[in-house]
Amino acid sequence: MITKENISDYLKQLQDNICAAIESTDGAGVFKEDAWQHHSGGGGRTRVIAKGNIIEKGGVNFSAVTGKTSEALQKQLKITSELEFFATGVSIVMHPVNPHVPIIHMNVRYFELSDGTCWFGGGIDLTPHYVVKEQASWFHHQLKNTCDTHHPEFYEKFKIWADNYFYIPHRNETRGIGGIFYDYLKPDTVLSHTQSSFSKEQLFDFMKGVGETFAPTYTHLMKINGEKPFSEQEKEWQYIRRGRYAEFNLVWDRGTKFGLETNGRTESILMSLPPHAEWQYDYQTVPGSEESLTLSNLVKGIDWINQ
Image (cartoon, rainbow, N blue to C red; front, side):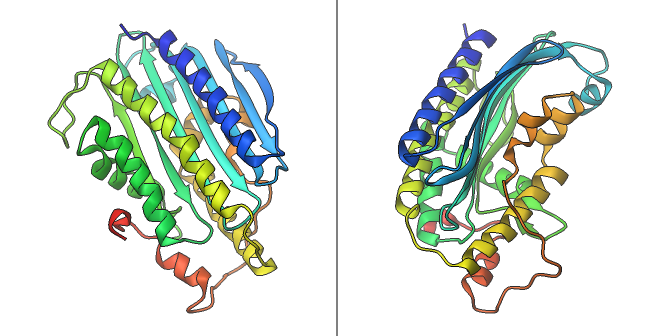
């Protein structure tokens, strides 16, 4: 039987493995750990890498916290009474030095209430400063391969979910090229899009599959892009795109809102923000430029698998 302790222990090891892979590929940056305790119970390990050869700032966070559901959380979860909760997960954001290396985000998480209700959520998405179609297609193939191992309909449905979730309404653009995103996957509940139900063990295995896709996928992108030359204009564009990334995280991201509403650790929650970003008034790209081409690919519904 899978317990919350089993899941938490696995996620700690996942954090260790990913940090080791990033450090090895970067070649200079080293993660510094900040262990912390949550005010209502539990805690976490925030690990931050900075000023590396490839990664300018990145974080790999583990948490396992407990507490009572606040009124805001009860409303969000659509429950009518105060319950105890347990939440554990690993959350990652990497901001590279080189504008040809994409930003990446991953989150895998598990939530359990004292009434026995539990669910899994997570996903991986990529935010290139410059969209390279061959790399975008390769990235989506890695996610599809992982999803297909667990159910043939997972990739298509979770890809659409990511397109809709990682969208910046006030900019009318997606945050990047998407990936997969899923939430509230509950054991033994029939998923409407698959007409299948999955045991807790099967959903845990899917979490493992997603988590273990991260390191080989992102380290490959680090290796092939990390030493490419770049101009001041390309660096300026990177800062503009980082500004868009920050806008999404601060205005629309549910995880950020959940963490702040439950009095989570602010430094860990806002770890996802870039070290430097720009907001230029009424910034316009030059028609036909690489920057303009990238913007044309920041839309929902692109079939990256068949590019």
